[in-house]
Amino acid sequence: MQTATLMNVSVKCEYALRAILELALRPGVEPTRIADIAARQQIPQKFLETILAELKKSGFLESKRGAEGGYMLAKPAETITVGQVLRSVEGGRTGRATLDHPGPLGDFWTRVDTAVSGVIDRTTFAELAREWRERQARYVPNWEI
Figure 1 (tube, one colour):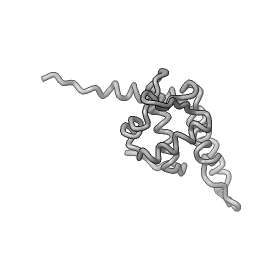
Figure 2 (cartoon, helix red, strand yellow):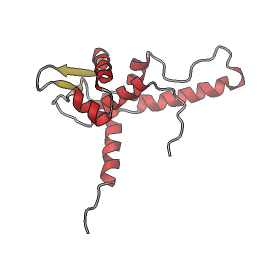
Figure 3 (spheres, one colour):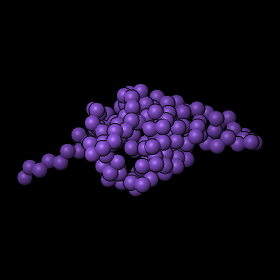
Figure 4 (spheres, one colour):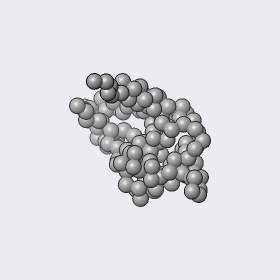
């Protein structure tokens, strides 16, 4: 069962994170076609095209044109954090909206935002890819009868 998150992340941001993770799971210099990313991550291809173009403009991705073209990470997955991508896509917003009159819970929400920022700024896509591979390896079906 998933718990509710304290952050409001847009669908666009969720798709951007999933696209970067998909590319981090496929290390190497071979570009991945947009259609392949869209199919594997269940993202509408037209929406993904816009997101990938923005991620390229932000310096996270490179692209290659042609029949063998597609997208790849512009830098190693070890150097790209979730926080960097979130801030790029969301325009700098990563936490709870700052309240003009925070009241008695203002300090509490500040601490929550600081904790969330700490997690997203320390988590790289290489780490997420490694964790995903390990989780998938634990669930390899056994076809013995």
